[in-house]
View (cartoon, rainbow, N blue to C red):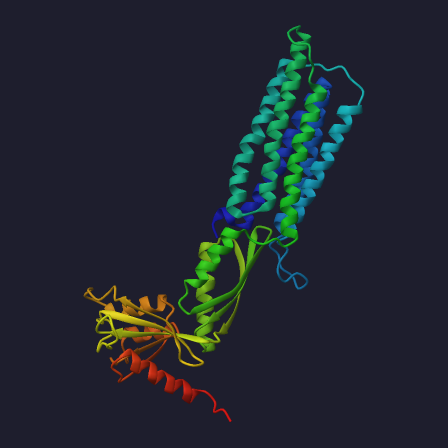
Length: 412
């Protein structure tokens, strides 16, 4: 876990947000008291609401990673609850500003140059802070920090609108402009805040209602699982967000039957999923042995017809046969050129890995592989290897029919 992803680092930004809100509220309060501007007062109320939500964000960040007996999966969704709460406070702010803009009594507004300069500073502070907070929030995948940074972006716009309102009033008193924008600016702030609130609410509710991970992430997870040679089928894959963390669950069919080997495979798949998909809290894989109706046989060939080769790694061709186990019918057959026949070293291991990637179930060959590298590669992937004395593909199939008949229970 990098520093930007650590809970301590994320909590630190919660404290920063509280401090920034205190500074902004103090700035706008001083200007509001001196000017009597409705727009500035609305922005000050906006800052006070954000101060309360910043405190709530910090509480969410501190509690979200804790696990208890009552909450064994953690309190990750608390961050999304905070996001929804922040959205509610945002809507409340918009309502208060709209009510004042539409129905409050008109008051005399005083505007000086120092007020304009202070509002410029109040615009720059959230702009700079939101840039860095959003960067940290995305790195930590924290919805609370991302929501808070998004709210600061809204402050940049609304404070800029306040500046425009004060500027027009200052120009109006100087005889340059006669269209004060105080109430109009307040209503513009309402629209901006309402849009931000809706985005925060919809994003938070998606997670609280266990919406799925996005399609691209699920596809990447599915491809990662299928890249494991022992996996023959993915029955289903699901995933969801909880706070800044993700949960992934899948049911897969494995070629291996030994429990210890299956556990090794699932641990390997889990590690690969964590590597390609950040912020994973838990990967739950339901693995079961494959119930085969078909088998894919691989046979080393001396030619591109049906003569078996005496070698494995040096065989120029390989025949692949998809056989229906119930009656031995060959449903598909192809002959592939050995892509490693010309390499000088470890060609047997390379060929074994290549066959594993083809999802081969069984290999029949004339060469003895006992104690050799290819046998370990094939065995680790759950591929059955059997030596045969047959000479042609047709003889291999006949032999397999006899073996399958011997394995099947007698029919009375």
